[in-house]
Length: 62
Image 1 (cartoon, rainbow, N blue to C red):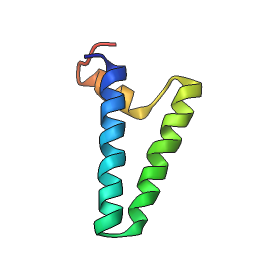
Image 2: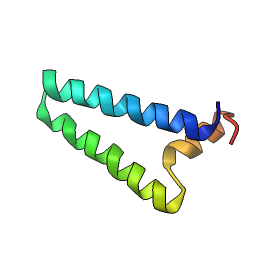
Image 3: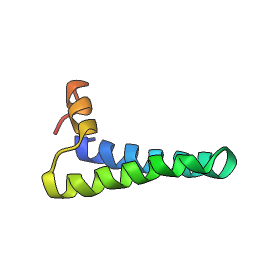
Image 4: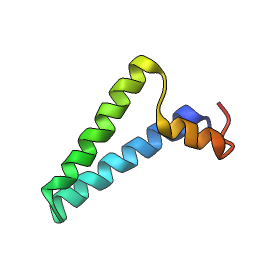
C-alpha cells in the first residue's frame, strides 16, 4: 500500500473512533473529529499532511 492509502485508512479510523468516543464518553471528542476533517481539507489544497511525513519515515512507499 502507498502513503495515500494508509493516510485515508488512518483518517477514517480516527473519525470512526472519535465518533464512538463522543457517543459513549464525551461530546468533546467531536473536536478531534473536526481536527481530522480540517487536516484532510488543508491537505487537499497543500498536498501535505503530518501523518504523511510520519508514514514516509516509517518506510511506507509513496
